Length: 314
Image 1 (cartoon, rainbow, N blue to C red):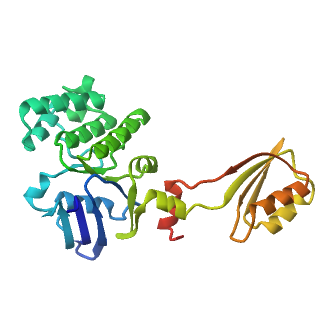
Image 2: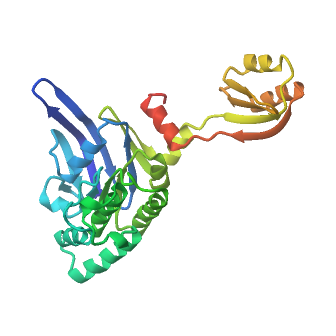
């Protein structure tokens, strides 16, 4: 049984004058223990999908199940916790400790166990000095930490994280990445992570589901996607300048070459098209009398892959 099943999900918002299709036939699944990224540009349907999974809104069509239970049913909510963008899952007039105790109580966690878990989360997320401060007086970063703690204190099997690093400093963001990896490694949690921070996604997820205009355009492992978009791109640093005429020859032979001339060095950035040999490029440089100082190969990151996919380049 999958931890999460989304099948042919459709959500249409109907206004007086027109209909807006926010999600259009989205399908994917998460197996227990997986950490999967849900990516897409603004308006792609990510947050709507998460709200349907949480049971906050009903789908127009399709099926969403959490461990085999329809997501809008009350029984399903015992298996799900969420951090919504803007830390909207906390109560502003309750203190940090009171929020955590409230959400632990909703889940039926015994008081002694809840107090221990609350102390651990407060220490983990650096909320010790703010534990008695009401949520509305916290900074945005502290509110986001509290929202994450409220989701974790419930101990549910499925975590939905919508922009969990929003407003966090670099150190806390890295702590969160480690925490997400640890939760998955323990095998007790399945995580669906939606974020515009590609570093967080690449560092914590093995697979990504990419949405564009309400549809799934990619559902694959990150390492496979990086391999698919890996190019034969190189950066070559030369000592001094190229002899007259050599640059024109290189540009005519290698159309994708970019040349940058500095005071004491020349940098070539080139992407070799199929049929072009890297050693052929080196031969041209040797014939021109160029002195090579450095050669490096450009590797794509998840952000580059994401942009190419949503632009339809692959």
